[in-house]
Structure formats: C-alpha cells, structure tokens
Length: 265
Ligand SMILES: [Zn+2]
Image (tube, rainbow, N blue to C red; front, side, top):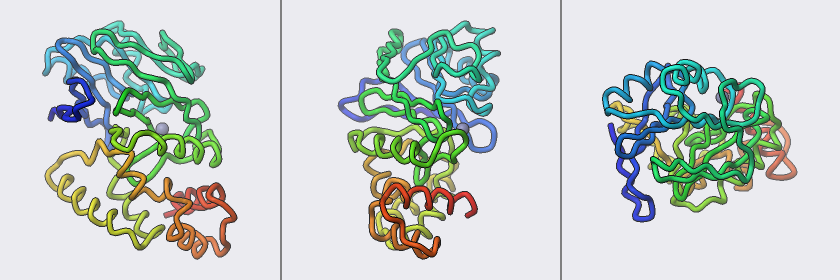
C-alpha cells in the first residue's frame, strides 16, 4: 500500500509501511528510483519491497539500538552499501554517519532533509528524525502511548514527549509499532472521559479490520487522545491518583506513575 502525501506543504515523496515481525513497521521512503528505510529490523522485508518497487537503497535511518530496529542493517549494508545514519552508540554497528541533536541530514536523491532530535527515555541514546510535517519517532511516541523505559528515565521520556507534543499539530507521526488499539485500551482506563479518543478508536478498529495500519497519526491527534501527552489534564490526574492511591504533585510525577501503571496493565 502506498500513502501519497496529500498535505500541500509536503513534497511528493511516498512513505510506505513495511510490516515486519509481529507488529513493527519499517518505513520506506521513495522518490523516483531512490529509497531510504527507517529502522530496518528485517533485511528480507526491505529487499522484497525494493524489488517490488524497483528501488535502490540509498540510506538507512536508525532511531535506537533495539534488535527489532537494527537487525537487518548488517545484511542491507552488505547488499546495498547505503549511508547509515544513527546515534553514536556502541550498540549500533555499521553507522557511517553518527548524528546528534542539531544535525541535519540531506537525502539528496529523495529531496528531503531531516533534523535530528535527541529524545532519550525509551533508551538513553534514542533519536528522532523530523522533516517539515513528517516525524519518525522510533519507539518514543506511539499512537495512544509511548515506549517503555529501557535505558532512560521517566523524566527524560516525559521531557522528550513534551517536546514532540509541541511540534506543529499537522506533523504526521510514523510510529514504529502497530500498538494503537492496545494503547487505547489503556487510555480508556487512564482517562475514562475522552470522546475524541473513542471516535478515533472506532476509526482505528475499522482500519485494523481491513488489515490497514492505523498510522501515521498526527501530533494534533496525539495531543487529544494520548494520555502520556496529557498528564496535565485533570481526567488523567484523577485516574492516576485513584490507581496509585496518592495524587501526583505535578505532570512529571503523573507521567512516571502513568508509565509504571502501563507496565503492569
Ligand atoms: Zn525499542
């Protein structure tokens, strides 16, 4: 399935979801014969798509070191010798272009530039890639949820998510997992009253029933439905207080309690 970017401010590069493993998406960007992939956990999935669409792999963008995001990098490097962008992290081999906060990546053949954002929390060295109206957040932000703490702290993840929440609302968010419906189950517990979330949920149920991704989402949508971006909202504070048996003193404490609650949900 090919999603054309309909947004008037987005140039016409296609972004295609490649389902991998049980619930990962490897996002493939293509323009003319050129392609880049984000977090290729599985090389065969990427190769099949390259063959199907007649593409040459120019670049790999890596957000963090987990195996389901980098497992295919070695084989893809061997087969295609692409440029490999990623955080300077000893756990990530084959990076030809280590990048950090403030760096800009120009993928000339795709006619697109990304800013690198450091968004620690899920891991300590996690980064995200941002182009105008396009965000690849890796496992930092999901639709209706966020990544677990597997190396970073709750306060880091909270800050990273708040930063992403301040991006322009129409920014499309290409999350790395199809977790939306499960996340919205938890969201229902952590903010019982949210009509917009229930509306989105119905839409996502139909998409999944048709075998289609619920992604990309948008920053605007996530601000409205994602409890992890809503720890300042009274309904979330009340639910977290009731669950934890004590009222958090601020949004940061609320976030930490919410993340801990989700871990055992
Ligand atoms: Zn991860």
